[in-house]
Image (cartoon, rainbow over the protein chains, first blue to last red):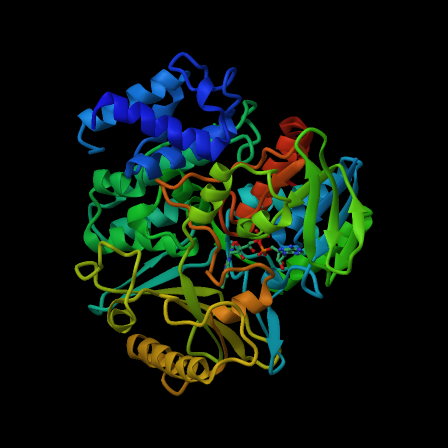
Length: 86
Length: 490
Ligand SMILES: Cc1cc2nc3c(=O)[nH]c(=O)nc-3n(C[C@H](O)[C@H](O)[C@H](O)COP(=O)(O)OP(=O)(O)OC[C@H]3O[C@@H](n4cnc5c(N)ncnc54)[C@H](O)[C@@H]3O)c2cc1C
């Protein structure tokens, strides 16, 4: 899966599941301040991503570092590089 | 503030009590026509059967459950508290072991039955105690905020692997996962320590079991001025995203205004309780995808002296036969390789003792919903299942042959009938390491979730979950102040 596909898939899933505007979904967007997703939503977001990319997150603490939408792309990219996501 | 608590199980009663003590006006609403149907149990043939409480962990004087019972003001009403139940483990290969209650006795029993295991056991129990001592809701000396929902201490299996216990001992420790219905291979270390941990410290009960606890709590609720509405299901929680909750609507049409609402039923109800648009699709999907614990078949029987008072029997497959993919069990494999839990209670005045047996079963072949009258295929299945389970237990505990009498049985349909909104699973949501838990707060201001589906099953799980939810609503210190101030009576 290439990086563009990751971006498209992440954006589509978040727009749908959190009722966000596509236009707001830029890499620099801060999850909390710009997208309005708080710590409650992060838990739901994991499930959205797990479904969209068909994987099961093994260590929830790895999410702590995520601040921006770009961090999510990177996070998914790393799972792809590690072979967790195909 | 006006608070409505939905559901009068151990969680709802605890939440109502804590809220009323803080000076709020509290209404506790229960769909069933008596309070705490699960915890109260039932009576047949003039014998009282417990359902939701047989024994608890941490019941010794400084134990965590005991402390919470004291905080709730019900400790003094519970008579005949015992703290030294022992568990018997009978394997299908004929091996039989025991684990007493109390940290030092457990280490000694471990070393005696499995030479060389004492030291690793001591270490294992130390790790459990450390984890238990790290939460402000379990340890009065901790003054920090509770750990975040994403805190992860790894999985149970890693800890068991590291300890290097012999297979039977390992299986005995794993079998405590039966107490909350999560397959050991999917259990998180943290949840295991919270549910099973206190049982190592002390395991006990009191006269009258669950019903005595319900009576004591009902009395405390009355004293605290809580209004109780029985036989009323909540049909709707009315709210908007800015102002939050403003009322709940009962099935008789009554609208009850409130500013805070604590829901303790199964979260699958939330989709229909709240109007469209209040919860985002992501959250509704999260709820819909939460794994459930397995369904179970429960037998209720009486015996005179085939089993000891207050004794738990874990009938386990040989550790070499345990399936690793224990999420789905086939009916055929059940009798050969199942784990069965049997509990014998205290004798009634005439010497008869109540016995309950639990077997996890796949619910795939059972009818949907709660059909009345029951389909004949189901009635035939139930008769056959009860008979098979009786034979399986007698095969493994030969002393029961001709020495006990089955009085009643419960299936997942019984659970659905008995507990409003139950899916029929034994313990509601299954708390697995890789599943995302629900948070006590929700996106709807003023709406909080608590109970076995949110934190963990068990009487302690329900009490702590209620306390945490009240903490989220009004500040952790409003609850923990009382918890910390409460000291043991001499
Ligand atoms: C067979 C069995 C044995 C057990 N043994 C033990 C044991 O020995 N020790 C131990 O610690 N734990 C034990 N447990 C676990 C423990 O009983 C439960 O985890 C605990 O009682 C759950 O409490 P709760 O308040 O979270 O849920 P519940 O007791 O299920 O309470 C929820 C209540 O809400 C009501 N409700 C739901 N929706 C609505 C609505 N919309 N409107 C109005 N009312 C509603 C329901 O009717 C129900 O009464 C056992 C459980 C079972 C099933």
